[in-house]
Image 1 (cartoon, rainbow, N blue to C red):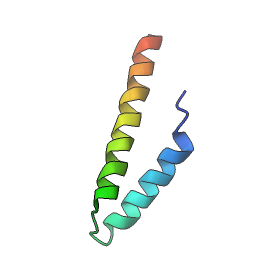
Image 2: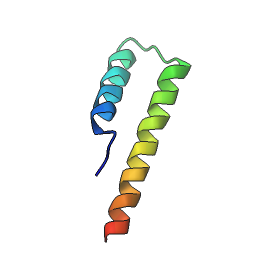
Image 3: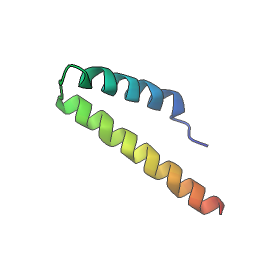
Image 4: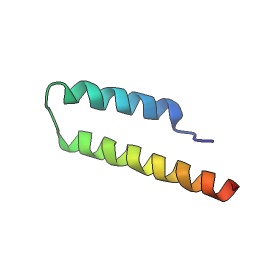
Length: 50
């Protein structure tokens, strides 16, 4: 399915951890964009299977 799954969990973990301190850097934004892209790719793959 999604090859980035372990990475994705780490990204979300890091993102949420940083958000607790209200720290939002360019790196965090990039990580968040990455997560959104992974989700879109995943959804597109699901649609292709149907």
